Structures are given as C-alpha cells and as structure tokens.
Image (tube, rainbow, N blue to C red):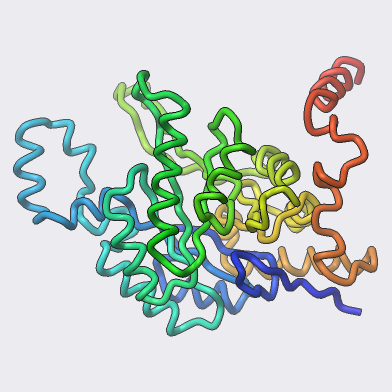
Length: 336
C-alpha cells in the first residue's frame, strides 16, 4: 500500500509536507510552476521587506537626495531601488501574488520581512486581497542597541504579530529566530497573539569581512544538514505543546532523511530553500519519493502515524533533549 503523505499546515490541506520556502527564485512564476510540477505542496513567495514598504511612501528620488547628501552611509541603508533585491516592489509584489495564485493550484503564501509594525498592517490586508492564502512573518532583527533588552525584543515581535493577526482573516505564521532567551515560552506567547503556525527557524545571514579591502561583504552560503539539529530540537520540544499551532521545520533540510527526522520530531510541514537552489526544483520530487519509500519500508500508512514519535512529549527519557544529551555527546567523544 502506498503511504499517504497528506498533512495539515495552517489549516490548509496539503498533499505532502514539502513546502518550498521563501527564495529569490520564487520571484519567477516559471520557477513556481516547476515547483508545483515537482510535487511541492505549497510555495512561499520571497519576502516583501519593511524597507521597501517604507520607501514606497515617498518618491525614491526625494528619499535618496534628502538622505544620501547628509550621510554617505545612507547609501548602505536604503535599497538601491524601491523594488529591492528580489526585483519586486510593493505593487509588483501584490501583482506577483495575484498571478501566482491564478496560475497554480497549490497554496501561495506571502512573506513579510521586517522588525517593526511600519506598513505591515496595510500590506497584510492587501496581500490577503491579492489572494495569498496565508502570510509568513519573517522578523529579522539584530538587537545592536545595547540598551535594548530581551524583553524589549520580544515585545517588538509580539506587537507585530498581534497587529497583523488582528487585521486579516487568513492564517499567519511566524518564522522565529533561534536567538531568544526562552524560545518555548515566547512561541506560546505568539500563539496567544494569534499566530496559527511557527516556523523553526529564520536563518540569519551575517556579513563576512574582506581582509584586502578592509570592508564588510555580503555573501549567501546555502545551509547544510548540520544546521538541522537546532530546529529539530525545538520542533521536538514544541510538538504537541504548541496550543494547536502548526509547526514547520526549516533550515538544513537537504535529504529525504532530513525530512523523515523533521516529521518524527513533530513537524506538520517541512520547508527547504537551499536544496532547491543547489539542485533545482526537481529536488522536491527526490525528497518526497525518499520519504514515501522510508515509510513504505516500515509499513507506515500515513504521516500521522509517525509524526512526533521522537518528540519531547512522547519520549520516555526527556533528559535526552536537555542535560543528559550534552553529557553523553562529550563523554562519547572523549572515549571514542
């Protein structure tokens, strides 16, 4: 019997748990169609950035002339064009949502990226009107202000989630950062604010240094399987304890075995970007086939039968997720 891979994420019925997460390539409709043909259950469009929304409120030329003349560093702050790195400004982004929704049968999820409420409520409503079936909030914020406390950071995030969730009827998920003092407690706080799902985790992209030119440089490094361990840990800890909110595991999903691990930890959906950028849209097919084969070999009929099997809640020895695991790893290394 062929195993069933159907799952529910954000209240959406998906044919498989594989979701193509936000990516520069997802700005192209042809690529989205390829993902659908390869078996992606849903797609998340590239993020619309807070800076793009703010820039649209004024003429670009005025913004540049009034700011850059006063501070050369402003050139590094404002986008080189309102359309931003993905080539999709706010208006074009809304059109991309409309076209993607019209051209595809799988769910199209929009993404908002920022660190404050500026413009988000208005655009959340517009994204809903454009046809997005859900919105993913990707809150990328580096607290470089040494006076900003952890409580301040959490309050900032909570205010954004509450504002967006209260203005739209479609489900809203939150792509969490792992750099929080108490991820579990804060995750439940966001669910109380209206979040229908939690994505673990946002992968922060830090700058590198050019030692010859003595300047910071931007470079994108694709994720590797070793990065899966942290989101896997928190997926397992939150599974069955997130007040009915959906869980999605992201970062480090490279092989079908990674997908299996995420489901065993308790994920409702499994998201990947790097694997698709590295190997192309058809890699989705390989991930799905590998998951189905793993289940068939063990006579597992449906995902629900394996979801959360290795979660914290169902574990006979919960210390494996905390202190005991730390001690055993180090002890094994010393004696191996």
